[in-house]
Image (cartoon, rainbow, N blue to C red; front, side, top):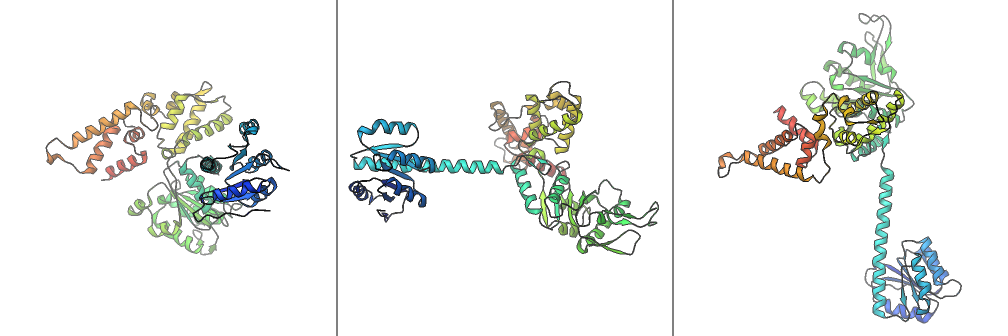
Length: 497
């Protein structure tokens, strides 16, 4: 084995391996490369070069074409196969040009340098090779990163369907929260899938083989709620003809999900708090204390802070349950998930209803993607179910969707025209007109007394955009270059003021 490693005092920009069976050639290359910013390695045979490559990351290999035992062509073909990101160059005479060109055309080598070489041209060739290798390596890294990112994207997860960034965050949060014993507080609008999230947490937890019990606090009369949770003994109240176990015992060892917690009677919430803190309770009408092991998951479609201010939710109960908070995004903030969900629902309902419906018309797809779906996933699910049942052709049309929503198609046309960024030219003009109108309404030229607060100017612009879009908040948001959720929050704040 020859031939040492040449270290430059400068920071190495790349590692270059020279291969030649003639010691005089290697010596000349060593002298030439001494003052370059590269880490240079030298090998006197193809076998030695492959041994170096096994142990060292090499960016560029420059090899003589004719060598005993293993030719440069054979060596570089092996390098191309095993180390595809390494740039491969041959040192060749003019007589070998046809062979070199064939190797270039077949992708085994990147280029060639004629013997005898010009020192300036050799340095330039190496510089270009290093630059090329960096581009190849960056592109390869980008492709691997993109492939890894795509492999991590989930289009479905434990009952959820959706590939948006918001839902990837939810999936990851559920995976992290599930193995814990901590209580989880789920927030989100009606129809966003709060019970689906609770079931996903249970299924991913160590309690998955134990019961999952769900209670909707809004659906149970307040006078029966205590019995539903804790159970009752015979004769505890009028109609209690038998002893009955409540959700607390039924969920022992598993998970108890209390949906719409803020709808529970405030006086019962104090008993629930004690139950959560101690793990003990008494059935209605009994003095016997029961002990259980339960994980609590609660949910509400109201802002918890607002519910606390309105005396609908005990503050101490909220903070006791909100160990891990999970906020489910509304469907309008989930990018193109509406279409993925619609396709999933279409398959389920065509199978269930034994209908031959193969897809959606292009106008129906535009409507599904652009509509704001105030009822979220539940509303979309019901709309697709209705459209499948009522469809009389192979495609769900935009009229089918409008009928399912009990709305006139004409009232939904603006949603169909909702455009991706950048805005279409007509809507750019519309946005400019809205802005100009807001400006003219808020300030009269030359009269400083008509200047209004910035918040008021913003309110005028938003309301005019919504009026321009015939009340379509989603399209108005597109004109104003903001998310629909921003407008909904603004509108809510004006209504509360």
